[in-house]
Length: 263
Image 1 (cartoon, helix red, strand yellow):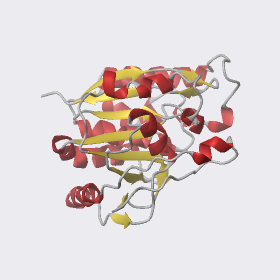
Image 2 (image 1 turned 60 degrees about the vertical axis):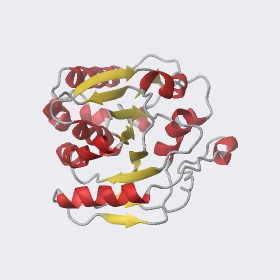
Image 3 (image 1 turned 45 degrees about the vertical axis):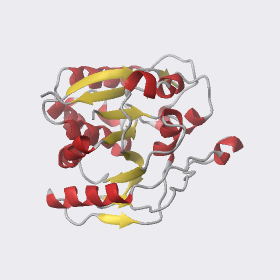
């Protein structure tokens, strides 16, 4: 099973038909990944904890509306995917065996919009079990890459590993939709694409020092670390592929990547 990083952009992706990422995600099963995963592990930029934490849900995942001031119809959407408690326990086992310390279990948390918004377009039937894993914003890219490496066995167990964040994520600088892409966003987005496609993964892990405008593109690392996990899970010889690219609001890149393990 390949691993993926998805830029989920604005929560309005759930209802705005004008966003180019919507048809991309809706074509997921026909054009991107025909194999049906046994379960899905989502690493979302919208769940930050001090230590790695998994949600262990034995029934149906709740839909979390972790956004404010958006159109009312968005708060009426539901994504009732079943939980994946066995996957959660397996993630916990793999991370603890790899030396990440005690992994916490959250038995009440459902799916945040970094998970359910793209999944409702990719797998609208909501029949595949879903588990989430948190990110640790006090750690660095290499730490999250190594988390991914520890989770690599899941690929051979039929598990789809999705990192959900954004290629660029500076909400204080967004402009009008349809406006020109600002230089710092374009520079970082291009650097990220070139680094991934050229296999310069150590540079991506140390993006703060290696990239142009890294701090501007990601003032906080929460939406970038999911990429590191997905990349690490594919292995050091993985090949990256850009599978979608679009922009909104002058600074928000929807660049999304597939990571295929080389044999």
